[in-house]
Length: 408
Image (tube, rainbow, N blue to C red; front, side, top):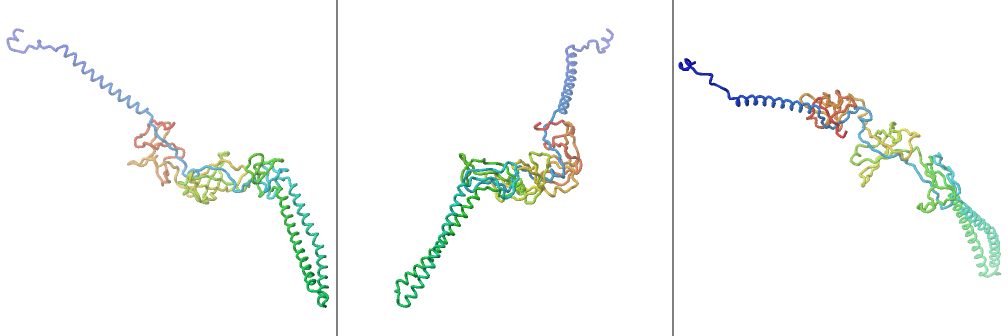
């Protein structure tokens, strides 16, 4: 060893590594390795969370491209009404003697529904008959007097021509004849007046009989025997205004109010499908009968009357109804398989696609588009009626992503 020092060779045995420096270097490497592992774990957790996180989306259901649903351009609701409906009342005030109608009874035009007490009307008629008899009975007596006055006038004229009667006597005889003729004419007028009073009294008796104005069904019975009815009463107290309400079932139709903003979609003769609230599975074919040419300024609606293609006993007045106005062109069969909102289709370099919601996940689905129908687009291939598709945020969605439907 001494020889090595003397020869000038380096002495490596004196070299040592500081234990502090050696320990700190190992810790640094381990820290970086642990940090990297934690970062990878965090990234994996973020990826796992992103893959399981549900995205809120709005959805729509693809509907058939043909049929009533596809052809519907406007929906409205209303009630079944009758064009011919009348509350039958008496023309005169009187006490009800009998009521011959019941709810649900079918009546014919002119059928007697009720009778009022007609004793006063019959008394008035009998008085008019008596006046006519008295007036007519006076005429024969006046005719006898007239004949006598005419003979007297003839004799007086002969005497005046011979100079045995003066002019005054002749004038008196002539005046007597003229006066009797005037009395006979007046008596005849009195007879005619009595006949007119008889007609009025007879009508008074007839007014005590209430008849059906047209054939139909009685839907209400509004008076009972013993009650007073009057055409001028407002219904207060114990006075009735009507006997029964008659509805002509052959005139039933649906009356709906359509918002004036959509009235341009409705026209006379347009096909309509109606559904009664009482029979929700029964679709009734109808047509628009008329659009009332005036608007309700308070409700901003226009009244539309819809006629049934064929009436049915199940259709009753005042039933609630929902109607769908149809587009006749859309009723024709076509190549389109389904209709979806235009917002449900994303177009890009790879072609149009839709995001179908299946088992809570999004499935990107290529689609083949047809023409547009308003806010909807025809799907020729790729979707079927009943498929649920996303309609919001399509640019941020991807295949397989879990979704939560908004509002559910």
